[in-house]
Image (cartoon, rainbow, N blue to C red; front, side):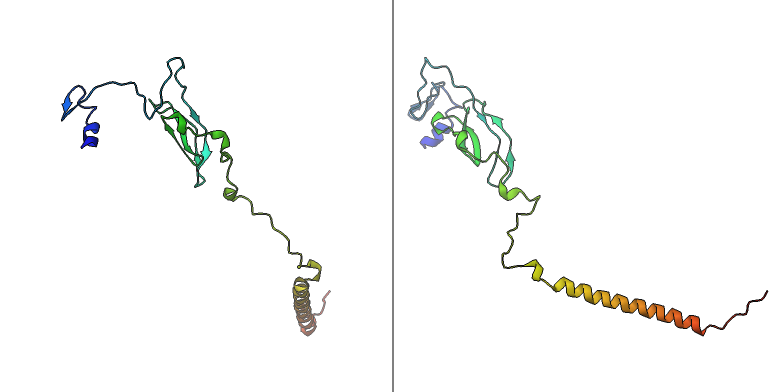
Length: 160
């Protein structure tokens, strides 16, 4: 019941709700946070841009909306709040550069296997030898066929 009364308090300022009288206005102090009259009002914070936990870039923003003037939250999720004691110390955050796991443009560096010796790998050499022998056999066959065809042709007499 009390929560319902408080929720409707702004609508009915100056009226009586049950046994309570709702007053308008106030000093906006909350949770023991007192404003010192000699201190100037706090300036709005600037939340720096950062990469969130999903790797998405969240652009920088100013906290200057009414009472919500402090940059709060965590390094991976920031928002504006109104309490100075919950302010985020942005200098401790390290998510201002692209995360390493997002660098997909180049493959990761390969560590060579010390047990693999390319000089002892004869697989390519065997393939080259077989292909070479087949190519030579094909050429020999072509030239043999051409030679036999030329030999079996009837001789033409040259007329003058």
